[in-house]
Structure formats: C-alpha cells, structure tokens
Length: 483
Image 1: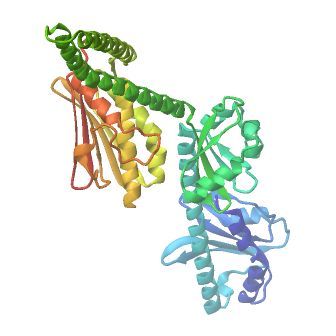
Image 2: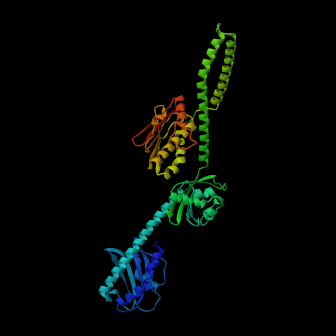
Image 3: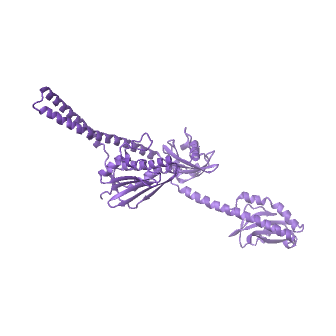
C-alpha cells in the first residue's frame, strides 16, 4: 500500500485541481473527478473531488471507471463525463475521470492548456507510482528482516534508543525472559524485571552501539537470565537500536576452570622437572658417600659423617618420590572426544570479540570425523591460545583479516590446523619453550603449547608451528581412537 502521508499530500490539491479543470473546460463547473494510478493488477485512487472521501481504494483493471464515478455521485443534475488516459514517457500511468454539469467533455476544453495539464498530472502520477514501488520494496525488505530476526538463535530486541520501548522481540528473547509478546511489546526494556537493577543496562547498550563492540555485564539473576550477559548493540537509525544478547556464564566459568587447570598443570610439570633434576646430583652424593664409608683408609669420623650424608640423601630421595607420586596422581587422563565439537564451542567463545576487531573466524570442519585421543582441556586451551594470539597480533598490527580453522583426517591421525593473516610470531622457533609467550595477559603462564606438545608426543601425535607469508600456521596431530 502507498505511504498514507504521500496520498494525503496529493489529495490536498483536489480543490485547486477542480478549479483549474473548470477554467480549462470553459468555465463549466466540475462536479466530481478522481485520479487513478494504473498498477499491474488494479487501479489505485490517489486524488478525489466531489465524491465521498476514500482512505485508499483499489479497483480491478476491468472496472468502468466513469461508471464507478457516477455511482459515487448522488446529484440528480444531468452530468456529462469523460475518462482521460494519462501517459508519462509513453507509459500508461493512470486515468483522470471527470463529471461536468451538462454535456461537456475535454474536447471542449482549451486544447493546449488541457494538454499541458495532462502532462503535469501524468508526471505527478509517475512520481506517485515511484513512491508506491519504493514503499513496496521497503515492505519486502522489512518482511525479510522480520523473518531473519525471528530466526536468530540469540535473544534480540529492537528498541527506542531513549525510552527503551520494545518494538520487536524474537522468540529467543521471549524464552529468555519467560514473557509473552503481549507482556513485552511496548514495554521499556530496562523496566522489565529481568533487566532492572543497580547496573545500567541502557549505558551498556549505548557503549556497545557507540564503540561497535560487545559489552559484558553482570545481570540480575531473575527469570531464566544468566549471571553474565554479552550485549551487542547497533543503530538501526538515529532513534532505534537492535540489541542482541548472549549468555557468557558457562564460557567464562569454563575459561576460568581451564586457566586454573593450566596453572595446576604448570605447577605439577615444574614439580616433575625438579624431581628429575635433583635426583641426579643426589644419586652422585650418595655414591661418593658410600665410597667414603666403605674405604678402609677413611678415618672413623669421616665414615660416621659419610653414613650421615647417606641417610639424609636417602631422606631427600623419599621426599622427591612423594612429590613425584603427587604430581602423577593429579595428572589428567587422556580421553577420546569429538574434535569438531571442541572447535565449534571454542569458535563461539571468540566470535564476538573477533567481529569487534574486524576479524572473521572461518571454519572448515571435515564431515564424519572420527573421535580422537588426547587431553580435551589441553587441546581446547591450546586452540584458545592460538586464536587469542592471532587476535592480539591483528590488534597490534592495526589491521583486519581472517583466521581459518580446519579439521581433516590424514591416515590414522586427525589434524587441527589454524592459519591467520596477522603477521606471524616474532620468534616462531620458541613457541614450544616453557614460559615463552607474546601475550601481555599477566595471568598467562606461557606453558600451554609446551604441555600440548608433550601430551601429543606421549600419545603418538605431533604439533607444529611456523610463520607464513601473511601470518602463521599451527597444526596439531592427534591419533584416532580405537573403536
């Protein structure tokens, strides 16, 4: 349907148009007229005079327009009439239908003036047709947007920027707040029970939309709301904002657990190295002490001291054995798992941060990939570290690009390959060395890749890293689990 304001604009000229028609037809009073646009399947009435007003009306193409006009006019006066086609650039745009008092027609009008009037009306109807077509196109776009909006898996709403009044909410949002559409539409977003509290939800939306990045907030624990919400907001127009919500509670908790696990693993690895490094000199000390205690030429006081050295060295060996046992008992066991699921979850964790930096994470996961053997948390922590290193490199280089993550089978192994265009590592030969890291995160120990390499070699896999022309290439090779 045509824009109501546009139709009203054209109808506001009706009385002036009737006066002009009366002059052009030799001063005979024009009793009624209507202007129609010729649409593909109907006639659209856009301007009227002398008949009851119509908001918007469409008539079938086969309609006798002049008869329709006479039927609408209630005067008993003898009325003549005519239906004049209006063309614009040799294209039929519509019809001007007129009723006169008496037997009059456009043939009796002033020819040149009436022809100019026809051209003017035809051009005006052409403009009106363009308005209608644009409005129909916009309605199609709006319908498509509504369909896509409703299919979003993440909860989303469209709101007024100032008042927070909800104009549209998708089913995922309705499920999140456990409210029906009637209870949501027209209400202010930051007055809903789930979003009210001491924290400023409105401020978080403005910050996200203005800086074009996600914002994390701690939400009120009401309805089915998560504790930690990720907000991504973008302006639809100066007064309207589209807000998408994401639950980051589980991801952040998992990330914290992985960090704690990495720290514990680093400590136990350090224990094992200490045990290994101290055992060698202790063995030598015990050996020399035993020689001193059994040598006949050794004085009695030296033999007594040697026995004391032997006993204390043995005690150190027992303490180191206890440390080794504790480290081995707390070491996580290797299991079999689906590598594609691990990649999908990890990508979901980093996708919003990547998009905020103008980086696309593209996955190419091989179908029917067999389960692999390995330490699930170490592999996930490694993938997180590789992706975060790439994002940090993109940020430092001040550019955007692509991170590609792929899985595929190769003989009896499955490969996890990560490539980026971020410029590469400054010292690629050191990435597997303990405590080496390029990350500025103070909580990052720099042992993730070291532990993964040890794990991979222990179970018959391998790990590799190198710089490329545009960035870096990382590959983790894991053995396929036995059926």
